[in-house]
Image (cartoon, rainbow, N blue to C red; front, side, top):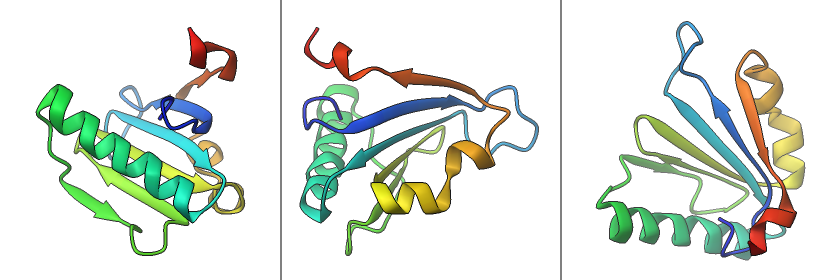
Length: 108
């Protein structure tokens, strides 16, 4: 995500929540369909080459307004800003511990 300049990266720790669908949500934004596609392609490649982890399920790659990459225990959401605001996942899972990744950390 960081290599492709994803914006507003957040990690939601769902492990202590009852009936959570996975252990973590990782959420970020892209500026356009192309940017969202580039971020998702990068994650797919990195997970496979660096972690030997294949994605279990993909949603939204056709329009790239909101792409969901399901790795079973970790679900990655890559949104365009308006879709992130509309679906408001951070608010829906408001009891989760949220770690926001500051953009200033991207170049460290």
